[in-house]
Image (cartoon, rainbow, N blue to C red; front, side, top):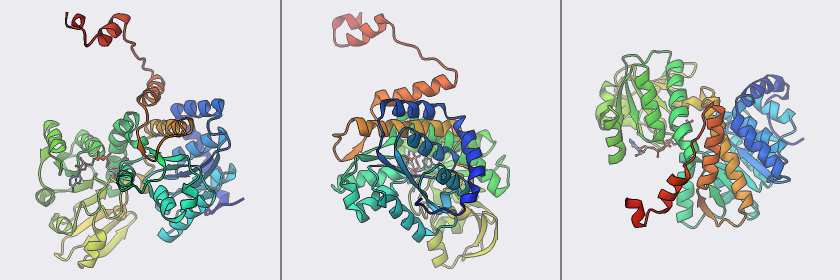
Length: 418
Ligand SMILES: NC(=O)c1ccc[n+]([C@@H]2O[C@H](COP(=O)([O-])OP(=O)(O)OC[C@H]3O[C@@H](n4cnc5c(N)ncnc54)[C@H](O)[C@@H]3O)[C@@H](O)[C@H]2O)c1
């Protein structure tokens, strides 16, 4: 069978963890069962390009069980070799190795494209973009793609504006069932716990600077505050900054906030958010980490070019001596910490996100005439994912009464004012 993984013998350990995740993913199970019942993905070639850990693996398995021909790739830093082995053992071609460097990562993504996927389920849009650059012949035959995260939707919108996007892409990230939960609660929890764990310190009483107060930054700030930290927020958007102030946080420019920071966490998804001058101005021993998720969100390459040197490394913590002599502790080389140095977001959250991904795949395949461009998941499909999840949490939804519906329907008549 085709594929490129580290060690096929690891499959048992990977499968045990996938089984555990599956047992906690009722939304993914329900939407997968529906795809199977309705034959939506039957015989469709689906490329899954995502973080490769037990929860993501569940989506690949669910799609395969629903009749799709699934192929999987993942960047080395986001790959769990045992999980890769378990998927390969289940008969899914997997191109991913934990030890892969960037060149091998690209080769692996190209190997996925060689299977001529008709749908790509992407996280970060790198495989969608690579397909446009390197395999226009594959793109020409695609039904479309779905995109899981903010930093993937951004370049796709730019491609759309430039007329370069040649397929419909459902912005799964932007569904309310995804970003109001995954980005905020899931990433908030998993990034903050990963920071405390990897840095091996309590956040109680620490001054934590959260850079960016979007959905991810809001969740990070909430979790830091809940753990007893003093939170300072930095923002470039006036409304987001005001929201942070209304939530009770101090709001300062980053250049000022770094001077008293114990920990700085970037949540922007923008390259060079924490630049060399910020690193230089940090107190000795301060910690920097990324909860957003693009390369060089902490400008480490530029810092090294400016003369910073790594003086020691202990696991995922490297100590960087800046030209000023200040030493800062960089967590996991500035990679997206909850994914690269922990197990990603909690399973209940990823269940929702993957429910949205499956609903997005179904939308693409039932509406086959979607124009090239970035599309929202229709509200009804989004609501359905939330309703399934609500039921799994033991909640139940109210339904507007006939009188309430009549009132809403009559908004433009005089009766509505009575
Ligand atoms: N680690 C994960 O598991 C995970 C999960 C979801 C999203 N993400 C990633 O997290 C990042 C943020 O996602 P989001 O949904 O919160 O995006 P968002 O657009 O809602 O928020 C980003 C915020 O950063 C602010 N910002 C931009 N540049 C800034 C700067 N230089 N200084 C201060 N603030 C700045 C923006 O004004 C915005 O408010 C993205 O890269 C996304 O892909 C990671």
